[in-house]
Length: 251
Ligand code: BEZ
Image (cartoon, rainbow, N blue to C red; front, side, top):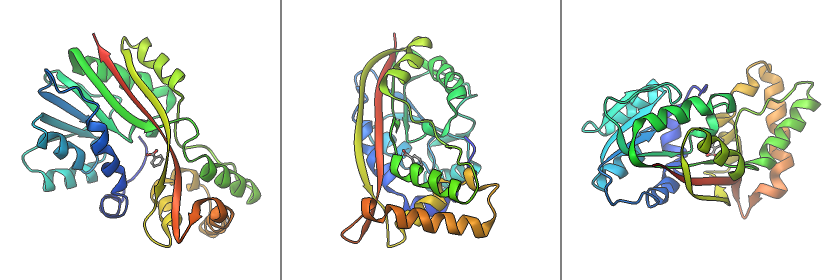
């Protein structure tokens, strides 16, 4: 994952990410599950929700800033700063949970991450996750790509949004059995009059690294204007999210 997080702003203005994640926790079949790893735990809000359900939990995240916040808010939970594609647990767990993380990992590194998850699970362990699925934020990324081209730059898509078929194949290759998969639209309200602008500033950083600040402003202004008719409704900005939610097991 290659993103520097503004961890405080993420926690205050993008809380919908973990609010939706609470619903995902319900996909864990609680029979015989005591220990859960929250992979890509961010600020630890969902790790804490898992703990409140009675699980013994560990949170892993690659961002030092996020781990610092998670530890300060939930001092009784064990949080480890580690890369999701390269970690080993001292003891395997009964379930691995992850919300809104895997789309940040390059396609080429997904199998390393899945190997780590597989090794971290006990037999009959459950792997429950949600990520952006195929078509996620398609309007936003198309608008960015067009505006980059008009300004003389090339837009490189910074996320991996797979289909059910593609991700099932990756899971099966690492030994998982897929038990549940669903791909669904979730238009998501953004906070404030500058909701889309703030979303782009928070989440789309790497494509702008080689763009000069003046051009960046021109590109973002164009994107916002071009998306107004599709994504601004009754005074609220929406992001065109598509979720891929899956459950797989290590038999
Ligand atoms: C997502 O949760 O799908 C997502 C969030 C931020 C950037 C890209 C995707």
